[in-house]
Image (tube, rainbow, N blue to C red; front, side, top):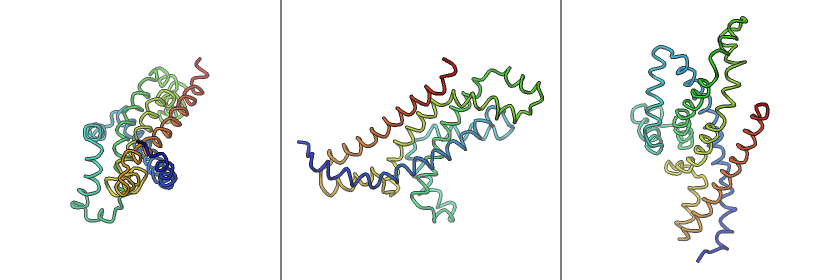
Length: 221
């Protein structure tokens, strides 16, 4: 039978570790977006050599499990690069999440950029804009609107994937739930509590996504 009193006692304990989960999510999202945009632009403009490297990068990080990538970064790379032995588990988790999800975000943004009609670029260039100005003022704002649904889905997946950080020793809400379950043997209540917390966070993000899309689409209704 479900122990409601234990569930009530555990929830405040898990909430104390919520900033760790949200911190991982926020930092990794910013880095993923920046790297993903760079990769998307390289793919769109087909820059020599860089395009091939970007294709290989995206293929690797989309084609291998995130957990394997986290282990490779935290346990594997320090054996090859001794300077990385000073890297903390928290930093390794951020690095792994950023590299993994930048590959997905790159494809989302590349598709959004390609969806903007090419004649808009041509029109911008014909009135004297440079390609850089055309991208900043014309193409990227429209591509950003088109990319929002896919990027928000990537953001939600990233939030849920922070639960894997506990495998590196990062004490976030999943790790704390595991610790509490091991000491109390209330496994169902412990993992139910963390599942409900993720569910509430994802529901809030989905609500925010709906309103962002509604606002962005207001001028196109």
